[in-house]
Length: 120
Image (cartoon, rainbow, N blue to C red; front, side):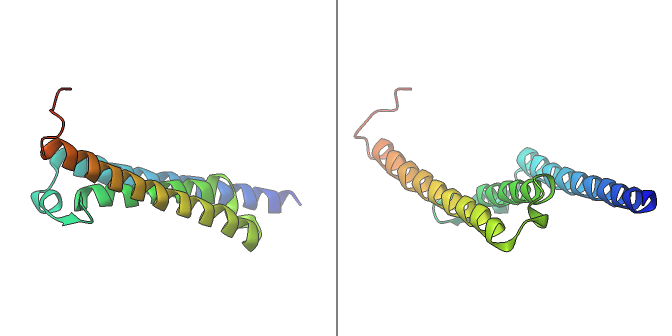
């Protein structure tokens, strides 16, 4: 019996270190991209936003998914619970991104068309 729990603890420890390293690599990639800001990523626009911003959003959502999957033990839950949690979050994040893009474009248009002065 003790052998099985030791094996389980070792595999759980390996899993934690694997997820930690993966999160670290993704974070380092985000930091490097944020520091150097490659010109082709900043000059390319997709859906009113720079490609670099989309990369940041996608990597952040990936990290949130990985944290939820590994550290909140969603991998061991039933399929229905996993789907209800993941799809709710996916829907809310997509909605938030849509609202931010729509309102941001509107506010930018208002300020750049001169209806309101840049008085911040």
